[in-house]
Image (tube, rainbow, N blue to C red; front, side):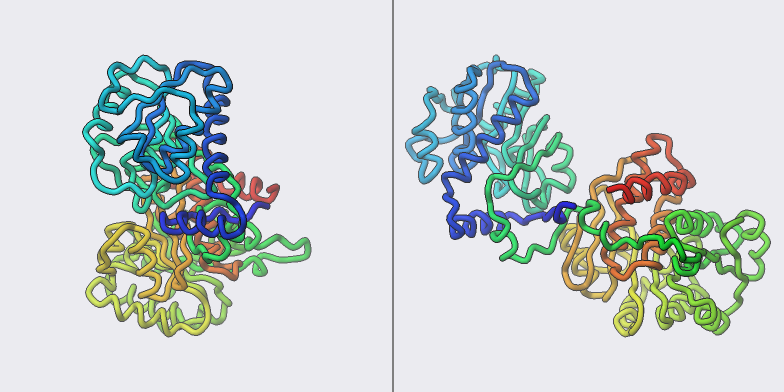
Length: 492
């Protein structure tokens, strides 16, 4: 199993380069490796054709001159257009320009683009501000001609720190970056400009990354697979954990049912829906392997959690807002069980979120996971910034693991560790999908010991279920895909 995929901020990438030099790897060899790796990707993905390389004034431009040299050696026709004066190049970029036997024209004198492939080596992940007019004009010509474009590090105009883009940012067919993905690679709108993302090892020693204590990861099985519980041949259902899902009234019972079935599929040994006495028949006739328990008040709920040794309590889906929801949330957090709060269980505290956070921070046994979408998040957290910044701060402020759902879902724990999930397709945005996710989180948390890794695994499995099913997915389809995913994970 490979190590978890670290995600770097732009300053961390610069620091990794600096530390690599301190470890005995020359900056010139890093640039050589970067340019060569991109030239190899070009030759792997395209047949020999004329190539236009756009080179910038910094290290990205230096990479471009290396790419040109390797393509020339492979008998590819190459033309270079540079932004700025090549006489102003310095350091490694100047050295690589000197080794490149190609005449260079100024970007503002580019003229028609007759090549079949373009390499964008203008500006890297540290870019700020607006694209120069000559760069925007060049990218417009390339777009109108329908040419494939390979981006070095990021397409020019992408902010590597946030994933924001500026006017004129091109859309790449392939983006090749180095050593680790950057934050900007994994967020929209940049993701719509990156095309296929390839990360190439350019020789930065692991020590250069280890020294920085990187705390952000790409959410893939390498991050959490070893933490998933394994089945014992002599175990029984309660060894795998008993999860409780608090249900709403008759008219909103579907959310809890979706969550409960997803939890059972996702490896909980037993799942019980807890409901009002008036809704007992509705749940009982529609659930089979999922058990149903009628509980009228918080005192009975407290006794039941302890007596049945409930591992995780999920509250929120379809619960409605009101004193019952608040009381049951309070009771669950005060118990020894793990707790997952979604939807109405969060909205109930929108007027006094600190009450909820205080309960969570004072919990002595078990973890709490919050699973808001953007609207629910904004009801209980007043935090500015990117999704990553806000989710990290929310986890720190609340004391819970927070899953901020979105096209790129962020999972963060109070210590600052965070993961970015990118495997969810757009058709996962469907009614009840979040209820299924909450159920998967509850199941994995019931038998897991690490709430952050359990939450990250659940988010990845949720996205993978949608990918397996394909377009037309509805929430009830998610649980059906889970056995296939568990089988796949067991064979990794």
